[in-house]
Length: 320
Image (tube, rainbow, N blue to C red):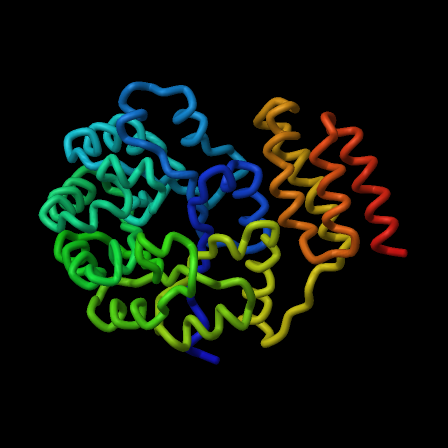
């Protein structure tokens, strides 16, 4: 049991998912660190309004941090010094070298950087020299099976003073398909002296136990496993404290959906919240009775009041 304790449990930066409201909720359930959706350094230095919204961290947040991406060391330095260093509340700065999205990859950003170790060397030096905040770099096993250079990238990070690394045990080519290769995380942990955070396919307490036992990682970053299931942070924390945990009831899930709506409305207008929450509702209720029918109905509704009426009815059905 001891080897499981003192592991950091973090929320991954997820585009279109980890907004202020969802980060606050994950903190409530025990996430040690959360990260914003990743922000482009190019957009940051041109005061892009949408990017300013991504970077926004609310007073209610205690463990929120920022993730950035880019490929030009000068722009990276400028974005950090102008936009990130002045934010006193964040302790950690994350740099993305793992995003597989075609648009990002084509620009030579995200996981495409793994093809250019010399540039990785320059970028990691720039990151560390530009800030006093803790720096982490998140990357994948490699671009594809022929180029699995995660140890090389990890060593560059360590040599240049990066504080910790996060490895998603898939190649860029895999995107999110197949299984994450936890052995890669184990190899990286054995090769480095800085902390290694494990990422990929942690959907339950059992997965958390297995990934730590397999990799000996210093912590775990939850990504898709937290979508519609912020309770997973609490389950893991309860298990670590007491050796057991109990799952939330279906009606508690409905209450949590309503709380997320209410929180989101503090930061965004109703039309946007109603739109963005549709996918969250689908994730939250997946596997519950009549969930696909309720999801379809939620997708048609336009106001918070009507959605809450529907959710209250659904709660009665679930309790009945």
